[in-house]
Length: 292
Image 1 (tube, rainbow, N blue to C red):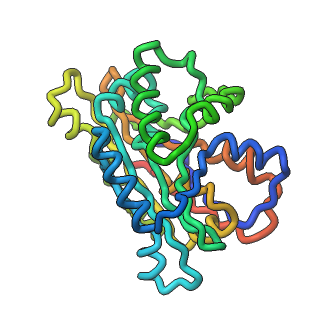
Image 2 (cartoon, rainbow, N blue to C red; image 1 turned 90 degrees about the horizontal axis):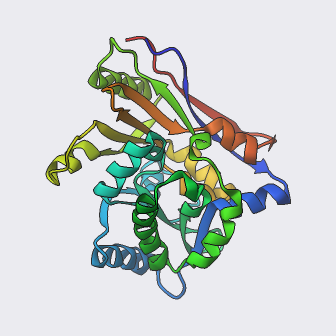
């Protein structure tokens, strides 16, 4: 039986201290697109990733969701997702917590002044000692290419390594009951998301990617992405850096004992770090995976 709740907590309109804002600055990379138009910047990102052998595996045009809902004051927001399946497999086998941060997301967003930005999570915030030298090299290569494309300085990113976060602190892991199959757990996840009107906007079946590449010792790995466009728009009005963690992801990962797990970002940690001074308009969506 699955005995606890997975929280998809999206909180709006916050006031944070200067110290907390500096912490957010270190967790997120934000780079102006320069003299490119938003459309040109999007094409540039995709083309440069392709040239470097980085596969685009997902795409979430949030601005189109805004339009479909008839929202006002729409700003351009696109989320591009990239993944190297071999690196993803190696990382999740080493520690399934990495599944929360796969695929790599690079967002293209327009601020309230109409200026365009590339935004992504800073991959240098995790302790380098967590990985073997070979895995460090593989992960740095994949992330470094994306940072190079958007014009982020690896030197600046590495200077934030004083954060030295343990990746296990950033996630919540919940074991799927032994009497429930992974397929049944996925059905339950999808059903409850539908019940709560939380839209599924993406799905990466890494298992199939592993099979296509002929990789050995394949374990089930699937990543589901959910988003409420109205909540997302209000969060991004508060601070465009929140887009680095959109859409919300829940991964299903099979361990070496063929046991399935739900893995998602630890929103309690996120709230404690950044959202202590919440003043109004808190929208909390609880995605509950009950007994099946």
